[in-house]
Image (cartoon, rainbow, N blue to C red; front, side, top):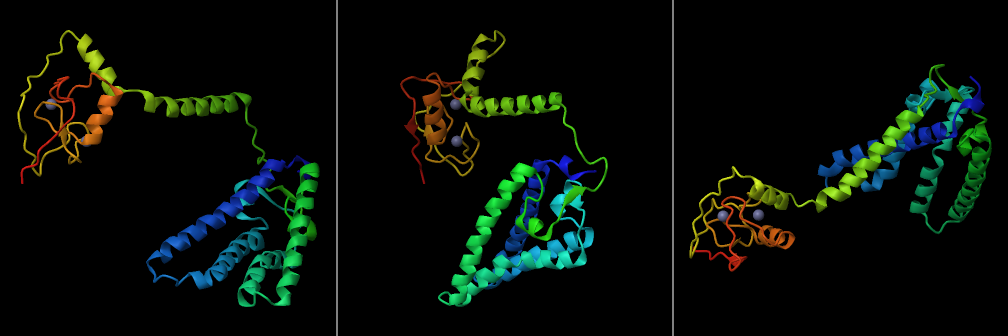
Length: 276
Ligand SMILES: [Zn+2]
Ligand SMILES: [Zn+2]
C-alpha cells in the first residue's frame, strides 16, 4: 500500500497515543511511589522517565518496527534497519541529557551550547511540521532525519466511516450536551409536588405540629437522609439540613416536607434547638 494513502490524522493520532501511553505509565509510577518517603523519587525522576521511554521504544520500535501508538492504528515503519533503530533510541535521549546538564552545572558553557541546539531543534520541528502538513509524510523530525517512511501493516487497516455513523455520533454528543445543561435546571421536587396535587387518589399523610423537637444521634435530614448539618425545621416533626431546606424553598416557594407534606407559611425555616 503506498504512503500517500496514509492519512495525516492517523499519523498524528499515533504520536498522540504514544505520548498518552508514556504519560499513563508515568502516572502509575507516581501512584506506586506515593507511599515512599517524600523526596525519594523526585531526584531520579528524569532517569525513570528515560527508562520508561526507552523500554517502550525497545519493545515496540526495536521489536516490531513500529511504536505502540502506530500498532494500535495498524501502521509501521517500512524501512527500519538496525542502525536506524539505535539512532532512533539515541534521538529520544536528547531531552534527558539537556535536563541533566542544566541540573548539574547550570552556568556551564555546555548548557549555552545545548540551549542553542534546542532552539535549532524547535525551529526544525516547526519546519518539519509545516512540510508534513503540506506533503502528509514524516510527522516527526527524527523520522525525516532517518528517512523513515510509514505504511499500513495490514491491508485491511484503513477504516471507512460512513457519514450516517458520524452524524449519529454528532447528534448523540449534541444531545448529551443539551441534557447536561438542562437536567440541573429541572426542579424534580416541584414537579412531583404539582403532580401529587393533580392526583385524585393521593391521600395526604397526617402530620404532627410540634412546639419543640429534639435531635438525637439517629436524626436524619428529611431531604437528603444524612445527619442534619445546621438542623432546621419547617413546623412539622421532621428535621432538615439548613442548606437542604433553604435551597429547596428558594427553588420552590411552595415547598412541602417530603415525608409528611406539611407546609406552614408562618414557619418556613426555623432553627432546631439542640438539647444535650
Ligand atoms: Zn439534608
Ligand atoms: Zn415533615
